Image (cartoon, rainbow, N blue to C red):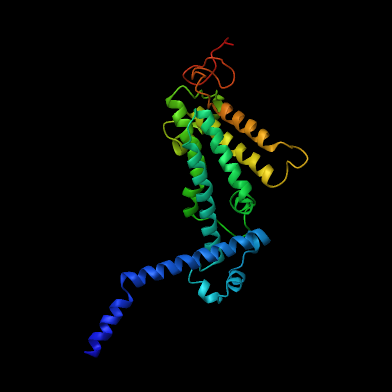
Length: 267
């Protein structure tokens, strides 16, 4: 009988309620570890992130923390994935706003900038200098793609309506543009994909200049400046207001051929 009672108690100890409590406790401790790690990022930077220091601040022994994150790199990876997911979610929400494609493009750009200004240390972690000795694993690739895919989604919608005019493409760049289109955005014209990649990189250049202080004593009204710059990036990429027909080069009003090149002698 005693053996039966012990067996029953053992079964109860691993029942759904107990497992659920353990999972909640693990989730809470994991969140606390990452919160403390973010505080250390803000104070000292990613290169000085230390599992021992995190454990000490949380009142844990290092061996206990290693059960959650076996190495500094695994903790860094978790922080990087969280940051990419956070800014990606902001971009995706903005992409679903109403308006024409160019307005939605501007909304995505503004959302990414707002996130960066609100989370400068996390922005620095994912878009700043590489962390010495750290190599990002494959698990970071999908989260890192979310902002770019939000912009691609706006471009796809623009192309389906009267809101896209891919700019011309030099012949020497066409093979690379075709490769990028096949890899990054199947179904989109190579001209548009090449312009989107350029605009995507320039967007983060704009944001990085602001986050890291390069606009100090250069740009005073940064909201207005960013809105103008983001609008120009969209137009140069071929994203147009709905009122502008898709048969012209962005910003020029010049008709284009099916390949995206301006018609000779037009304008």
